[in-house]
Length: 236
Ligand code: GLP
Image (tube, rainbow, N blue to C red; front, side):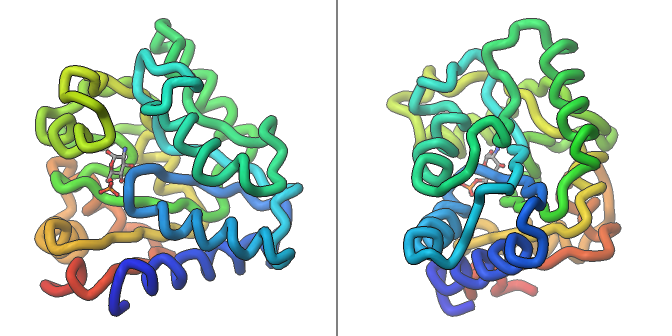
């Protein structure tokens, strides 16, 4: 795609098609800067009367530990602000891990129960971190399975500090959906933009499949769509 807007529109078309085909579908949603253009487009189509979210369910990938839904740095706030408050979704049907739950086992088990009660996601939207993380599944020695608590790597803290007032405000840990549930999505949609993602995207899609590049596991999925702007796709 020529640029971010064109890529966002193409990705929004795929999500929109999913909702039209299955009005009560389960969407796996992502945060970060990559999906913002998609959410803007979905809101616009909804406002025009072309897209109905009344039966849609959503499960987000991750949440920072220690941030409340009211904190404007939390992913729950991001989702409410950028999407949910502008469409006709029932908030009860939207899920983000509970960053305020101090008991990690409880928080993670609860989230896995939600994911499993829905039978997983029909379509999972993903971005990719510069170190290859998906959700907050950071490079590690093994692929994680269910929802778990992660200590964020310095590279991720640095990459995400742009959303915070100062780097000290970036939480050091997060709850994230695991690789198992991401891979159990019926369809995956990876959106990527910018030169800084070109190298990791090439590694993830064509390099060897290993937990030190978490997104490389996506090569095993049989319904993965990758949408990017020319800059991100430059090395493919
Ligand atoms: C965060 C999120 C990821 C996201 C990544 C890339 O770490 N937890 O889900 O994919 O950032 O974000 P961006 O799209 O802003 O580059």
